[in-house]
Amino acid sequence: MAGAIGLHVRLASLTELMRTENLAGVLRPYLRTPAGDLLEPTGNPVQSPPENLQPGPEVLPGWRIDYQVAAGEILSPLRSAQWGLYALAGVMALGTVALFWALARSLRRRVTRLVDGAETLASGDLHFRLQTPKNDQDEIDVLAHSFNAMADRLQDMIGRTVQAEKMAVLGEFATGVAHEVRNPLATIKLTVQALEKGEPDDQRRDLLVAVEEEIDRLNRVVGDLLDYGRPVAGEPQAVGIRRVFRHATVLTSGLADQRQVTVSATGDSRLAVYASPDQVIQCLVNLLANAIEACEPGGTVHLRAFRNGDRISVDITDTGCGMDAETLRRVTEPFFTTRQDGTGLGLSITRQLIELNGGDLQIHSVPGEGTTVSVTLPTANSDKLELASPSHTKEQSTAKPHDALTDPDR
Picture 1 (spheres, rainbow, N blue to C red):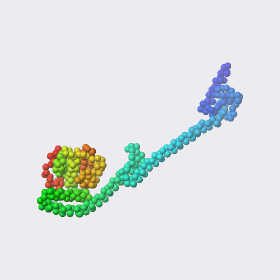
Picture 2: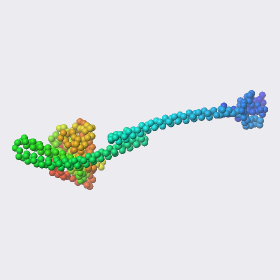
Picture 3: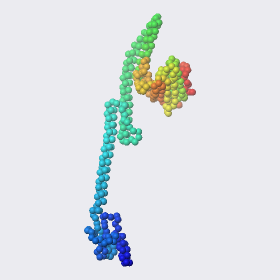
Picture 4: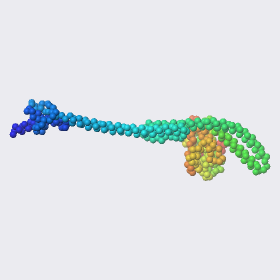
């Protein structure tokens, strides 16, 4: 009994060497005894020796471990892995094809949008712009931004070219009109004045006065046409805002009284712009007159001057009827007017003169609430400050300002 227990323990220690958990189903070990018998790892004898039994290492004298190798079982995991890799490769190929198809479709659609935009722009629609996102921009979006920037520059260049051609034609036309119309008008006016002095009938005299006034109006229209067709920049110098406001309000005080409109002004009296005094006065008078005429009786017009960075801004705000979007878009076009007695050149000339002096004009209006015209001009250096007096207003510089004017230095 003791010998049997000892043999069993010894056999168990041998079969410990035969553990092949990691190769289960592929490699099956057997213990070969010195007598040639085969034992399973559990110690049970094998009645029918398996085929393809391969001799293994000898663990003790006469004791050897033999193996039965299942070749098919060795390749089975590899075959399973192979089919898995094939399936994965197929899925990846289909995913790649689908991804590239989606990207190509999106890219084609976006490139087609660029091509259509270029064709639309080439057909003459200079206002066409591509829709571009503000964030997460890729190369196509950058190209779309560049397209819009190119369209802006092209529209600006074409607009400037067309404007230059218009100005050249208008300059020649205005010169011809001035030569062919002003001389006969002067002769007609002298004749009407002579007839007016010797006319005893009051009714006929009133008719002659009306004719003289129409002659003066036609002469002003020709003058405006010349000013618009061939604008000339004046000699810039430092001119104080206070003096500009004073001259402008004096020159428009009669119109303000007639229409019962209150005019006021505020601002720092030390502010000064560097521009042509005569042209600044002319622009401000035109803008102030337009603001007064836009107001109903009891309305107000306010002038305000303030420093805007390294420039001086002047706002003319009225409580008039305002303008709609279409009128606001065309209000500075030549010969566009909403008044029956207007020529449509006042604002056009004003914008030209402001730009000739290095300034900018912006108009903001709300229908029924009023209009604000903002004029921005270069500021004068303190060492160049000479409160120049405009030549064409010297005779009126001592006139009393409008009663409603607030002194700018307050």
